[in-house]
Amino acid sequence: MPPPYRPRLVSSTLSADLGTFPVVVLSGARQTGKSTLAQEGHPFAERPYLTLDDLGVRQQAADAPADLLRRFPTMTVDEVQREPDLLLAVKSLVDQDRPRRRGRFLLTGSANLLRMEAAADSLAGRAAYRALHPLTRREQLGLGRAGLWGELLAEDVARWPSLLVDDAAPAEDWTALVRRGGFPVPALELPSDAARATWFEGYVRTYLERDLRDLSNVQSLPDFRRLMRAAALRTGALLNAAELGRDVGLPASTVQRHLGLLETSHLLVRLEPYAVNRTKRLIKAPKLYWADAGLALHLGGGEPTGAHLENLVVHDLLAWADAQPGSRPQILHWRTASGQEADAVIEDRDRLIALEIKATTRPTMRDARHLRAFREEYGDAVVGCLLLHGGDATFRMEEGIVATPWWKVV
Image (tube, rainbow, N blue to C red):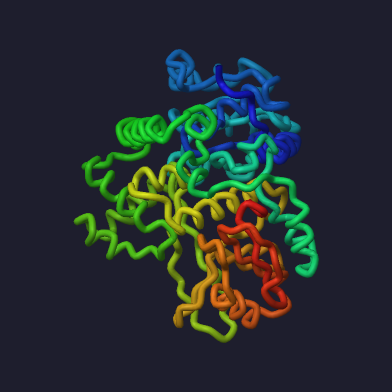
C-alpha cells in the first residue's frame, strides 16, 4: 500500500496563482510528485485531469489541441512538454477569453518550459510559473513545508537561539537523509539502500533513454552519462566547464550544452554568486548542485560527504524560495578571490542571511571566520549568519553568528 499523501509546501501558493492567472505552470523533475499533487492535493483534485502520457490524449493534443482544451471549463494537463505546440493552443484560447478566465489551465511538465525554445514565448504575460522540488525533509515528515528560513528572516538574530531550540522537528542523521533523497518513491516507500540504488539506476536510465530524447538530440548517451557522474563528483564546487570537459573528453561548449539540458530537466542547479562588490574582489562562477542529494550520491558513488549535506540545505532553500508569493528570495553563494566564502546566501530584498554548512559535530570559531568576514563586508544588511553543523548544540558563537544543528533549520 502506498504511503498517505504528504502535503506539499507549494500548494498554497499554487492555489493563489490559480486565483490570479489564467494559466499556471508547475514544472519539476520526473517523479517529484506533480501528478500526485494534481490528482490528490487540495484543491487541485477537484479539477478534471488529463495527461499526455495517455496515448489517446497525446494524439488529440497533436491533431486537435483546441478541441482537447475545450473539454472542460477548467482543467489540469500533465506532461505538456510532450507536445510543445499544445501551448500555442492554450495561448489562443486564453487570448479569446474576455475577460480572462482565472485558473483555466494548470499545466504540469517534467521540463522547465521557460528554457525550452518551442515554449519560451507561448505563455508570456499569461502564466505564473512554479517549480515542484523533491520532497523536503519537513514534507517527508508530513509538515508540508520547508525549513525555518522565513522565520529567521523575520526575527532579530538575538532571538534565533530560542527560536531554534523551541522548534519541534526531530533530530535526524543527515547521511540517512542523503541516501534516501527526496523523490517520493525512494524516500517514502523503499526499505533499503539496495532497493533505492535499483530505483535510482532505473531513473537515470529512463532519463537518458526517454526524457532526454524528447528534449534534444544527444549524439552519445555514454558521454552524457559520464558527464553526469563527473558533475555529481563536483557537487558544491565552482563550475569550470573547460576542466569538466577535460575530465570527460568533451569540448567546453558541449559540456555547457549538456549541463543546460540537465537544468532544463530540473535535475541540476547552478547556484549563482552574490555579486554585490563593496571592497572585495568576488568570484563570479556559479556552484553546481543537484535537485536531489540522493541522485547526486548515486551518480557519484561512494559515501555521503559534507558536499551532500550542503546539497540537502541548498535544496531546502530553493524549495522554500520557489514557493514564496510575490518577489521570491534569491539563493546565492559568496566567494572572494582571497578564498573567503559563504556556502549559501539568502537575499530577500535588502536583507541577507549567510550560511556556512559543516558536517562536523563540534564547530569551532575557526569554522565561523568566513561568516565574520561576510558580516564585516555587508554590515547592517546582514540579518544574521548561521553555521549549520552535524552536532546537537545550538549556541551564539559571537555577535550576529549562531551555530545550530542542520536539522533544527532544515
